[in-house]
Image (cartoon, rainbow, N blue to C red):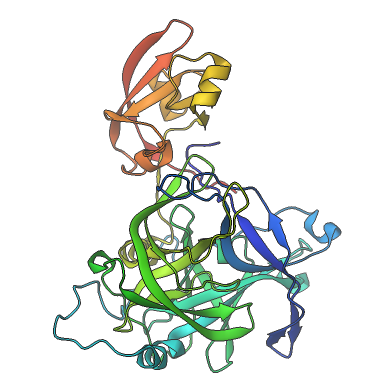
Length: 418
């Protein structure tokens, strides 16, 4: 595992998709195709461990996928100044005097700004003239500005060569991928068509458990504008990605989230987006079915990441330059290591920041700036509290000599990793 890369370890719904004159139809399969299963996805004891990303993915032939992964579209703003967006509504505390609407009022106000996003890939390897773009997945997005910016999930647009956006009235246009941030599972798309309606961002920091919420999205990729309702079940949840990182400050709710709903808005009763739906939990380690556990990226996180993506086209994350595996009690006992928390360095390039500072393969990094690396504080999450150029004090143990040492490491910029 490279310290600069976050790869989601999830289960994804698989469906067979058929395009009919621009509309999406077909027989939707209920099969689950598992990449892997994440453990301890929430902070509560006895946490379930099957996270389901609610993105429909199309099946493709073995020969089609054998050519390798397509390259993600780059930012059109690379090397130039990005346009200043006209945001719908900046994050602000709700008006205490504002009257909450009914679910019908919320839907009438918001659904025109909810879109279906289709991820298309080219499996031929040819140029644009010879490309054979095929739909491989679909999810949901919501329009946040009159400039045509659309928020969705990173895993909805991952690996795309082209994107289609279908509006609530059935109009289909091409979208440009501005950028993504895998760590927060957010992606930003832009469409160059007139926009007449947008959805405002609300204040996720003002949410309270029990508050009524509404979710909207393209259920099964076909039923656009599908509405479900529920309540806020919990705040500040953590989702374990199964790769040593976790998504923080997540909103837990019980509004049903179906395949195709990934990237759709979670709304308060003022019709403001207070989260972007990203995942649900379906069963526990013991195989028990779990009902009503959906998770959304908070609007505070959305606001922060979208602002960066509009300006830069990417989120620059800090980088130590090492590969590792996270420790736990079982691994520590098996390897007869002196500690059960931290990360064991497995590969370290000679010119990386960590190597330059004196970290070796086999060293066990236990703290960053005095904060212990443990289940509640994964290495990647601690690392991402800092920015490129920051100097952090890294404590580590060298098992060969049983020495504990602390060295300063100057963080660099995480390189793009295909």
